[in-house]
Image (cartoon, rainbow, N blue to C red; front, side, top):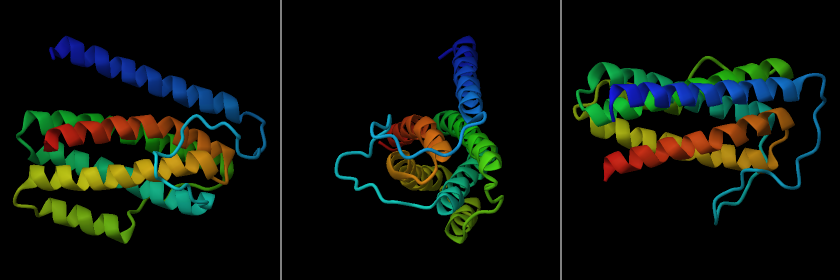
Length: 189
C-alpha cells in the first residue's frame, strides 16, 4: 500500500470515529437510560452466551483492555522492526484510542469515568511484553488474547449491558476489535 493510500485510509478511519463520536453525543443529549433494545445491532458470536454485567465492571474491564492495547502498541512501535507488526500496532493504537475516548465520553455522561490504571493481569502482561526476547511473537500472542476477550465483552454488553449509553459504545467498538483481531490473526499465520 502506498503512503498516499495509507494516509487516505487513516483519514477515512478518523472520519468514521468522528462520526461515531458525534452520533453518541447527539444520542446522549438529554436522554435518560432506556431498557435494552430487543433488536441490537451487534450480537454475540455463535456459541457465545451473553452475560449480564454491571456498567461499573464493564468500564473497568473495557478500559483496562483498551489501555493495555494502547501501551502494548506504543511498545511495538518503539521495539519492532517488522513492518507488518508496526502497521498492525498503528491500527490497533488508533482504534483503541478511539474506543478509549468513547468510554471516557460515555463515562462522563454516566458519572462513571474509566480507570486510568491497568488491571493486575494486564499490568503483568505488559511487563512480560517489555522484557520479551521475541517481542513480535509475544505482542501478537498477547494482542490476540486481549482483543479476543475485549471483543467478547463488547459483543455481550451490546446485547445485555445495563447501560444504553455503554451499549452504544460496545456496538461501535465490536467491529473495530474484530478487524484488529483479524489483522493480528493474519500476522500470526
